[in-house]
Length: 230
Image (tube, rainbow, N blue to C red):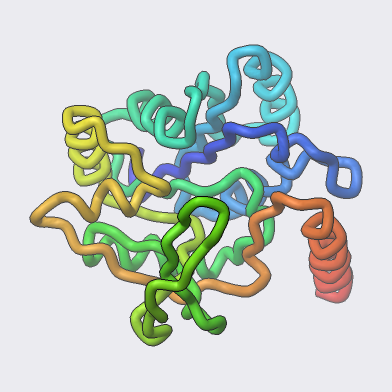
């Protein structure tokens, strides 16, 4: 497998929304396919989508090792299914949201470099808004405390891990019945693991709302203009 393998996860239909004529998923996979440090790409989708998504990716990425696997009922299950499909010779695994098509190649490579050194690295941004911890009661949400921003990071993807570390994290989560919101939350439970943070980008948005599509079109037009100039 070599230096690294990249996984894409997608458990909603948002990854198939068209952005200037192509599914968001395709824009995202293109970013990782452009890296000479990614040896294989694994895309997790629903069973009913595997055939047409596989055909789309095969038509787009001639000569690249791109595979489609069946996802699960959650992000965690989908990533685990993709992880199981990788060979034990895999060095690093990058997990990335299918609906984050504007990740920079430089950030991907920084995350790989950091994970190669520390074992686990996520992309994240410092919190700029004041964050409140709350209690949700009967009809009212009450502030419990204000969290210090200098100790908070907004997690993005990719999240990159040594293969054996991520496998152990998923085995422990399955054994304990633990459900995490991202891969880092699973790895953080291991006593011998330490997750480091690589600075992300405001452009690395997760497209989840209609308003995000407007911003995505703007970013795509900017990228197209840069490529034309270059």
